[in-house]
Image 1 (cartoon, rainbow, N blue to C red):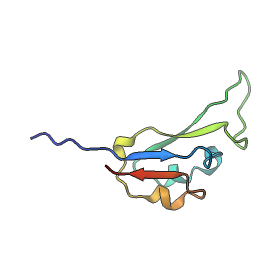
Image 2: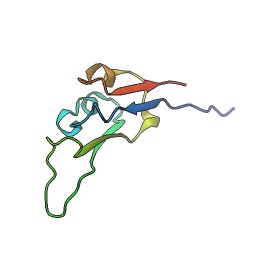
Image 3: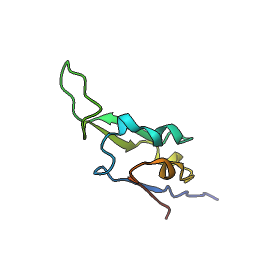
Image 4: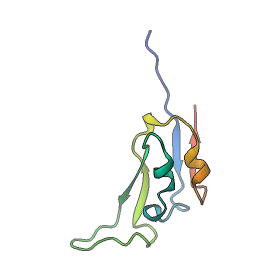
Length: 86
């Protein structure tokens, strides 16, 4: 018998989560390393300023590893995360 596991849907409100590189609370608390931060504004030979809104963006890299422990929801200071289980 094959068991098909449905993964939770994780939504990030990017209008609320504007400086994820400085915050990183969800990344630090997540036991399965679901989230990552990546730069979206890159200039050649120039380091991106993490204090500027929209320079970095939080993304979900390993949704299949999410255990829905909700720790990320509890520590997010701006309530930018939402987890839905189908």
